Length: 298
Image 1 (cartoon, rainbow, N blue to C red):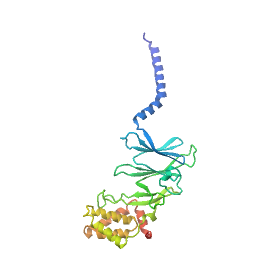
Image 2 (cartoon, rainbow, N blue to C red):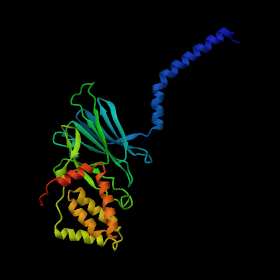
Image 3 (cartoon, one colour):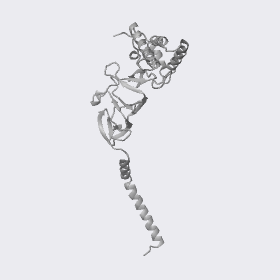
Image 4 (cartoon, rainbow, N blue to C red):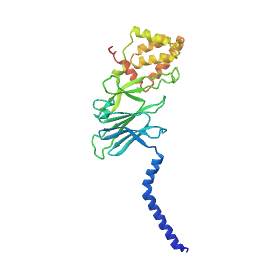
Protein backbone atom coordinates (compact mmCIF):
# COMPACT_ATOMS: atom_id res chain seq x y z
CA UNK A 1 0.00 0.00 0.00
CA UNK A 2 1.33 3.41 -0.92
CA UNK A 3 1.21 6.24 1.58
CA UNK A 4 -0.70 9.34 0.66
CA UNK A 5 1.53 12.26 -0.34
CA UNK A 6 0.82 14.27 2.81
CA UNK A 7 1.43 11.32 5.13
CA UNK A 8 4.52 10.42 3.17
CA UNK A 9 5.93 13.93 3.60
CA UNK A 10 5.17 13.88 7.34
CA UNK A 11 6.83 10.48 7.72
CA UNK A 12 9.96 11.67 5.88
CA UNK A 13 10.11 14.77 8.05
CA UNK A 14 9.88 12.72 11.25
CA UNK A 15 12.53 10.31 9.98
CA UNK A 16 14.83 13.25 9.14
CA UNK A 17 14.39 14.72 12.62
CA UNK A 18 15.06 11.35 14.22
CA UNK A 19 18.17 10.86 12.10
CA UNK A 20 19.41 14.34 13.03
CA UNK A 21 18.91 13.67 16.72
CA UNK A 22 20.72 10.35 16.41
CA UNK A 23 23.65 11.98 14.60
CA UNK A 24 23.81 14.76 17.19
CA UNK A 25 23.82 12.25 20.02
CA UNK A 26 26.52 10.11 18.43
CA UNK A 27 28.65 12.95 17.06
CA UNK A 28 31.01 13.39 20.05
CA UNK A 29 31.65 9.66 20.15
CA UNK A 30 32.18 9.60 16.39
CA UNK A 31 34.66 12.46 16.59
CA UNK A 32 36.60 10.75 19.37
CA UNK A 33 36.58 7.48 17.46
CA UNK A 34 37.66 9.18 14.26
CA UNK A 35 40.48 11.02 15.96
CA UNK A 36 41.60 7.82 17.65
CA UNK A 37 41.74 6.10 14.26
CA UNK A 38 43.51 8.95 12.49
CA UNK A 39 45.70 10.52 15.19
CA UNK A 40 48.66 8.56 16.56
CA UNK A 41 48.42 7.31 20.13
CA UNK A 42 51.06 8.15 22.73
CA UNK A 43 52.45 6.53 25.84
CA UNK A 44 53.89 8.47 28.80
CA UNK A 45 57.69 8.27 29.06
CA UNK A 46 58.19 10.74 31.94
CA UNK A 47 55.79 12.77 34.07
CA UNK A 48 56.17 15.37 36.80
CA UNK A 49 53.94 17.40 39.08
CA UNK A 50 55.39 20.93 38.93
CA UNK A 51 53.43 23.41 41.00
CA UNK A 52 49.87 23.32 39.71
CA UNK A 53 50.93 21.68 36.45
CA UNK A 54 51.29 18.10 35.34
CA UNK A 55 54.02 17.86 32.71
CA UNK A 56 54.40 14.76 30.54
CA UNK A 57 56.82 13.67 27.86
CA UNK A 58 55.01 11.18 25.64
CA UNK A 59 56.18 8.98 22.80
CA UNK A 60 54.14 7.89 19.79
CA UNK A 61 53.36 4.18 19.72
CA UNK A 62 53.73 4.25 15.93
CA UNK A 63 57.50 3.96 15.23
CA UNK A 64 57.06 5.87 11.95
CA UNK A 65 55.30 8.87 13.50
CA UNK A 66 56.94 12.24 12.89
CA UNK A 67 57.72 13.91 15.13
CA UNK A 68 57.91 10.92 17.47
CA UNK A 69 57.29 12.73 20.78
CA UNK A 70 55.21 15.43 22.36
CA UNK A 71 55.14 17.44 25.56
CA UNK A 72 51.79 17.92 27.30
CA UNK A 73 51.15 20.39 30.09
CA UNK A 74 47.90 19.86 31.98
CA UNK A 75 46.36 22.30 34.43
CA UNK A 76 43.47 21.08 36.59
CA UNK A 77 42.87 18.14 34.26
CA UNK A 78 42.82 20.26 31.09
CA UNK A 79 45.59 20.27 28.49
CA UNK A 80 46.83 23.85 28.14
CA UNK A 81 50.01 23.27 26.12
CA UNK A 82 50.88 20.53 23.64
CA UNK A 83 54.13 20.59 21.66
CA UNK A 84 55.09 18.05 19.01
CA UNK A 85 58.85 17.59 19.07
CA UNK A 86 61.78 15.23 18.58
CA UNK A 87 63.99 15.63 21.64
CA UNK A 88 62.34 17.60 24.49
CA UNK A 89 63.97 18.63 27.75
CA UNK A 90 62.17 19.98 30.83
CA UNK A 91 63.63 22.53 33.27
CA UNK A 92 62.20 23.68 36.59
CA UNK A 93 63.35 24.71 40.08
CA UNK A 94 60.65 22.76 41.93
CA UNK A 95 61.75 20.18 44.50
CA UNK A 96 60.16 17.32 42.57
CA UNK A 97 61.58 14.57 40.36
CA UNK A 98 62.10 17.33 37.79
CA UNK A 99 64.55 18.85 40.24
CA UNK A 100 67.22 16.60 38.80
CA UNK A 101 67.04 18.80 35.72
CA UNK A 102 68.97 22.04 35.50
CA UNK A 103 67.46 25.05 37.24
CA UNK A 104 66.88 28.46 35.70
CA UNK A 105 67.65 30.49 38.83
CA UNK A 106 67.41 30.08 42.61
CA UNK A 107 64.03 31.86 42.67
CA UNK A 108 62.47 30.77 39.38
CA UNK A 109 60.09 28.18 40.82
CA UNK A 110 57.21 29.84 38.99
CA UNK A 111 58.76 29.20 35.57
CA UNK A 112 58.66 26.05 33.47
CA UNK A 113 61.04 25.76 30.51
CA UNK A 114 60.48 23.28 27.68
CA UNK A 115 63.38 22.95 25.27
CA UNK A 116 62.83 21.28 21.91
CA UNK A 117 65.08 20.07 19.13
CA UNK A 118 63.65 19.69 15.65
CA UNK A 119 65.81 16.66 14.86
CA UNK A 120 68.46 16.09 12.21
CA UNK A 121 72.01 17.39 11.95
CA UNK A 122 70.78 20.80 10.84
CA UNK A 123 67.94 20.97 13.33
CA UNK A 124 67.04 24.10 15.22
CA UNK A 125 66.41 24.58 18.91
CA UNK A 126 63.55 26.43 20.51
CA UNK A 127 62.55 26.96 24.11
CA UNK A 128 59.09 27.71 25.46
CA UNK A 129 58.82 29.44 28.84
CA UNK A 130 55.61 29.13 30.83
CA UNK A 131 54.62 30.90 34.05
CA UNK A 132 53.38 28.35 36.60
CA UNK A 133 50.27 29.58 38.45
CA UNK A 134 50.88 30.04 42.17
CA UNK A 135 47.21 29.38 42.89
CA UNK A 136 45.12 26.34 41.99
CA UNK A 137 42.00 28.41 41.46
CA UNK A 138 40.14 27.54 38.23
CA UNK A 139 40.52 31.02 36.77
CA UNK A 140 44.31 31.11 37.28
CA UNK A 141 45.86 29.84 34.05
CA UNK A 142 49.44 29.17 32.95
CA UNK A 143 50.84 32.08 30.96
CA UNK A 144 53.22 31.88 28.03
CA UNK A 145 56.28 34.02 28.77
CA UNK A 146 57.96 33.61 25.42
CA UNK A 147 59.48 31.31 22.83
CA UNK A 148 63.21 31.59 22.22
CA UNK A 149 64.70 30.22 19.00
CA UNK A 150 68.19 28.70 19.00
CA UNK A 151 68.69 29.05 22.74
CA UNK A 152 70.26 26.09 24.54
CA UNK A 153 70.17 25.60 28.29
CA UNK A 154 73.50 24.55 29.74
CA UNK A 155 75.18 24.96 33.13
CA UNK A 156 78.19 26.99 32.01
CA UNK A 157 79.83 27.63 35.39
CA UNK A 158 78.87 24.40 37.16
CA UNK A 159 76.73 25.97 39.90
CA UNK A 160 73.61 23.90 39.12
CA UNK A 161 71.85 26.87 37.49
CA UNK A 162 71.24 26.73 33.74
CA UNK A 163 72.45 29.52 31.51
CA UNK A 164 71.01 30.19 28.06
CA UNK A 165 73.42 29.80 25.14
CA UNK A 166 72.23 31.82 22.16
CA UNK A 167 73.65 30.64 18.82
CA UNK A 168 75.02 33.24 16.41
CA UNK A 169 73.98 32.68 12.79
CA UNK A 170 75.04 36.04 11.37
CA UNK A 171 78.42 34.70 10.21
CA UNK A 172 76.97 32.07 7.86
CA UNK A 173 78.58 32.32 4.41
CA UNK A 174 80.91 35.13 5.52
CA UNK A 175 84.23 34.31 3.79
CA UNK A 176 83.45 30.61 3.82
CA UNK A 177 80.67 28.08 3.24
CA UNK A 178 77.71 27.77 5.57
CA UNK A 179 79.00 24.43 6.83
CA UNK A 180 82.35 25.99 7.67
CA UNK A 181 80.97 29.20 9.12
CA UNK A 182 81.64 29.79 12.82
CA UNK A 183 78.62 29.73 15.13
CA UNK A 184 79.71 31.31 18.41
CA UNK A 185 77.47 31.03 21.46
CA UNK A 186 76.56 33.92 23.75
CA UNK A 187 75.87 33.25 27.41
CA UNK A 188 72.67 34.64 28.97
CA UNK A 189 71.15 34.13 32.40
CA UNK A 190 67.52 34.17 33.47
CA UNK A 191 66.46 37.39 35.22
CA UNK A 192 63.54 36.42 37.48
CA UNK A 193 62.50 40.00 38.18
CA UNK A 194 62.26 40.90 34.49
CA UNK A 195 61.28 37.37 33.41
CA UNK A 196 63.65 37.33 30.50
CA UNK A 197 67.15 36.22 29.54
CA UNK A 198 69.84 38.90 29.84
CA UNK A 199 73.52 38.89 28.77
CA UNK A 200 75.90 37.25 31.24
CA UNK A 201 79.01 39.25 30.36
CA UNK A 202 81.01 37.84 33.27
CA UNK A 203 80.55 34.29 31.94
CA UNK A 204 81.01 35.25 28.30
CA UNK A 205 84.47 36.80 28.65
CA UNK A 206 87.50 34.52 28.39
CA UNK A 207 91.12 35.19 29.47
CA UNK A 208 93.53 36.78 27.03
CA UNK A 209 95.97 34.44 25.34
CA UNK A 210 99.46 34.06 26.70
CA UNK A 211 102.31 34.20 24.20
CA UNK A 212 102.51 30.42 24.15
CA UNK A 213 98.76 30.06 23.58
CA UNK A 214 98.85 32.54 20.71
CA UNK A 215 101.73 30.68 19.05
CA UNK A 216 99.87 27.38 19.30
CA UNK A 217 96.71 28.92 17.84
CA UNK A 218 98.61 30.38 14.89
CA UNK A 219 100.35 27.09 14.23
CA UNK A 220 96.99 25.30 14.23
CA UNK A 221 95.69 27.72 11.57
CA UNK A 222 98.81 27.41 9.41
CA UNK A 223 98.66 23.60 9.60
CA UNK A 224 94.94 23.38 8.77
CA UNK A 225 95.52 22.77 5.05
CA UNK A 226 97.94 19.94 5.76
CA UNK A 227 95.37 18.38 8.10
CA UNK A 228 92.75 18.41 5.33
CA UNK A 229 90.78 21.25 6.92
CA UNK A 230 89.62 24.57 5.48
CA UNK A 231 92.23 27.08 6.63
CA UNK A 232 89.89 30.07 6.44
CA UNK A 233 87.17 28.22 8.37
CA UNK A 234 89.70 27.21 11.04
CA UNK A 235 90.93 30.80 11.28
CA UNK A 236 87.40 32.24 11.56
CA UNK A 237 86.47 29.74 14.29
CA UNK A 238 89.43 30.83 16.43
CA UNK A 239 88.95 34.52 15.69
CA UNK A 240 85.25 34.30 16.59
CA UNK A 241 86.01 32.53 19.86
CA UNK A 242 88.32 35.42 20.78
CA UNK A 243 86.10 38.30 19.65
CA UNK A 244 82.87 36.86 21.09
CA UNK A 245 84.80 36.05 24.27
CA UNK A 246 85.78 39.67 24.82
CA UNK A 247 89.35 39.39 23.50
CA UNK A 248 89.03 41.22 20.19
CA UNK A 249 92.74 42.20 20.16
CA UNK A 250 93.72 38.51 20.18
CA UNK A 251 91.27 37.69 17.41
CA UNK A 252 92.18 40.57 15.10
CA UNK A 253 95.90 39.93 15.52
CA UNK A 254 95.44 36.28 14.63
CA UNK A 255 93.35 37.22 11.59
CA UNK A 256 95.95 39.73 10.31
CA UNK A 257 98.96 37.45 10.83
CA UNK A 258 97.37 34.19 9.62
CA UNK A 259 95.27 35.21 6.59
CA UNK A 260 96.25 32.90 3.71
CA UNK A 261 96.06 35.54 0.96
CA UNK A 262 97.70 38.89 0.15
CA UNK A 263 97.56 41.78 2.62
CA UNK A 264 95.17 43.76 0.42
CA UNK A 265 92.67 40.87 0.42
CA UNK A 266 93.18 40.41 4.16
CA UNK A 267 92.06 43.95 4.98
CA UNK A 268 88.89 43.65 2.86
CA UNK A 269 88.14 40.22 4.38
CA UNK A 270 88.63 41.49 7.92
CA UNK A 271 86.34 44.47 7.27
CA UNK A 272 83.67 42.13 5.88
CA UNK A 273 83.91 39.83 8.90
CA UNK A 274 83.82 42.66 11.46
CA UNK A 275 80.85 44.26 9.68
CA UNK A 276 78.93 40.97 9.99
CA UNK A 277 79.70 40.83 13.72
CA UNK A 278 78.71 44.45 14.27
CA UNK A 279 75.49 44.13 12.30
CA UNK A 280 74.30 40.94 13.97
CA UNK A 281 71.54 40.68 16.57
CA UNK A 282 74.27 40.31 19.20
CA UNK A 283 76.45 43.21 18.04
CA UNK A 284 75.76 45.21 21.21
CA UNK A 285 76.49 42.11 23.33
CA UNK A 286 79.89 41.65 21.63
CA UNK A 287 80.78 45.32 22.12
CA UNK A 288 79.81 45.17 25.79
CA UNK A 289 81.81 42.04 26.55
CA UNK A 290 84.89 43.55 24.89
CA UNK A 291 84.53 46.70 27.00
CA UNK A 292 84.70 44.76 30.27
CA UNK A 293 87.91 44.47 32.26
CA UNK A 294 90.00 41.36 31.90
CA UNK A 295 89.19 38.15 33.76
CA UNK A 296 91.45 36.45 36.27
CA UNK A 297 93.09 33.19 35.20
CA UNK A 298 92.40 30.11 37.30
